[in-house]
Length: 379
Length: 120
Image (cartoon, rainbow over all chains, first blue to last red; front, side):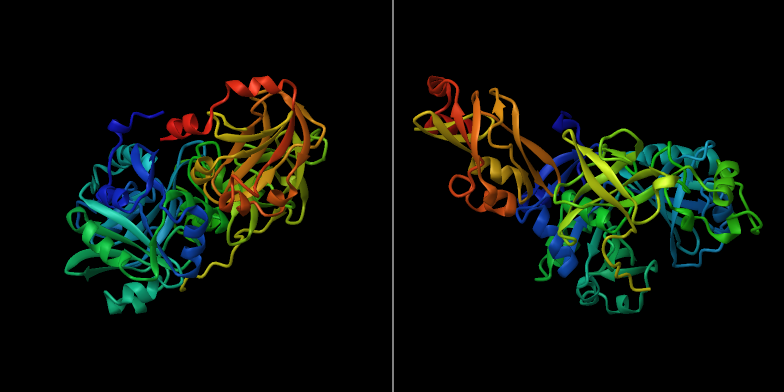
């Protein structure tokens, strides 16, 4: 077990304790896994009203072009990610992947064009490596800085827009993946209409010294409950979203992971800025030629959850290996078990019936389209 | 006779048969249960064997057999409705009845006061 005394605290740590959270070590931070309501109710509340998450452990990185021209930062970042960054408009956000020379995924991230610089949000467990990677590769063109004096919260769910509107009316005009700067209770925040639940919602970057105040005011709203990492995981799983380290890592390529939508036309073969990112040879070839293993949704036929790590077979006797589950659990909104994993291409067709090994038994499980719930993004 | 284990099971012992469940403390720690798997009647277990599985949204946990014995009955009600384990863990949500190989072995388990002290 990790030594609790060495764990880092987010600016909202004391607030979590005062709310009765159960704390666990996560990516070097002491984080709330659940509050007294419990994972099941927190999950359902987020889909019915609004949930508030502390995601301050994630890395917030500013990439500022030395030339003053954001295009220069965008071109530089395109050397590390297969996304179209140059074509990202001011005040817009896009999902991206850091790839390595073998075509594997080093991390996934959000990229924002903030007008005169790029703003990135990266995973907590990868943030130090990401910062070094960015500095090593872009350091001659950009100043790369980790923001350590800001909290990050997410407000997610069908009531999130109405709740945030009470603090800042202009939020109503934001679309999915828009990013704006706004004063919430006289605190300058960066608001993005995005999230990790499949619901409409927002991620809000707040100066650390004002984070408790803004968060408490949002929690005062009767529609809002605090939500821990437990429900964050079940919400993202139902939404079909990858968890770095589980569903994607250096051993999976973007194409195997089914993330080809994160590679826009301009970066593909024949595009204006085709390739030019680590592993482009393999990744672009896979786009054309296909892959031998694919990430798919998996829906167990029974009630038993099938967890990450379970082996998949083509037959009920466990003779012919077909793949591995990478994330799995119980989906409270689906009201049944849900999972995702990698299967050999010949078993990847939706509707294929496979068998998952759970405690020595082979349980039927169907290859299913993702997501498991209807996404409600405001496009 | 009511006994407890450090693995958070309770045993209500009548003659050589123990009714076994998980404690209120354990149910609270596990959170809302969504799945329960019970052993088959007739199965034999040694003390410490995994005899049942309970799952929350987040994780699966084993329920250990508290003493050597044979399963004589299981409680289908908690399979049909796992939330019963959260609402009435030390009553209606018993897991299984165990015919004890050595009823005297129960004397070594915790009594209620000792268990309460253990989880305090």
